[in-house]
Length: 116
Ligand SMILES: [Zn+2]
Image (cartoon, rainbow, N blue to C red; front, side, top):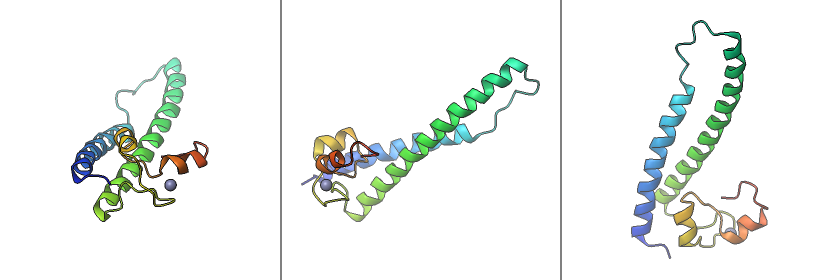
């Protein structure tokens, strides 16, 4: 059984994480300034950068989604149980991945495919 203390601790971590992710996402979504007269070289670099930033944005949004899900599961009291089999997720797993939704058994069964 997961203690209230741990849940509270994790909740604080998740809230902080959420704040940081939202700030990062907002920054990535912000239009770039100061590129009024780009040189040809810069255009090429820019395209690469855009692809990179898009990837990061996608990644951050995915994590934010997990953080939000974890927070709502804390609210409804289902936090710390596996969404697949209902089994308990180990404390050490939750400390490592606070938004984990599957017990180790089930995440193994999913062959590492988006398994937390
Ligand atoms: Zn499970």
